[in-house]
Length: 225
Image (tube, rainbow, N blue to C red):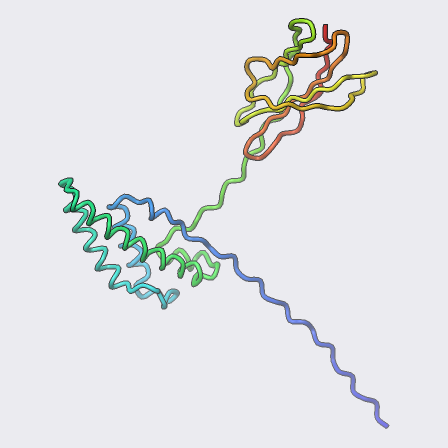
């Protein structure tokens, strides 16, 4: 009896990774009338006959007609007439609605390809600039106030919205449990009250910004009097 022919192993087909969708900037919703008119005119020209966008959900002919009417209304509204301004604004809302529909279509049809996207006449949403980490703060000086008080002086950190001051009791040069309090600003010096005279305290400070908290500063120590 002949041996059975082994069935070759089937290699799983890799699922293609979906292209990251490029988002349209909706800055056009905040355009002044003249800027909106020019922007829409540019979009119409960019999409007319564009082989990458053959199923535009809004008739470009209708959009051109509305935009031409919009141009006339912009001119009519220059005399300050409330009626003319209202008519201009109404047509502006209609045009923006049409451009929103086209924008959604462009996001899908461009399929994550920036070169194709840019032929549409739309602007892409720009990536956000990563928040810059703040500089690590330092404690410049600790001075004595009244009995049981110490003033913590530290310079302001550019970009910080607030700070935290950490304190602990030092025993044989070793810190105990830390307690942090929020401080709104670096000036005037942060006054710590209710301390025990004759006790050595350790202090740290850190700053908070858009990227989060910085590391704690080096520990500065001082005996309360």
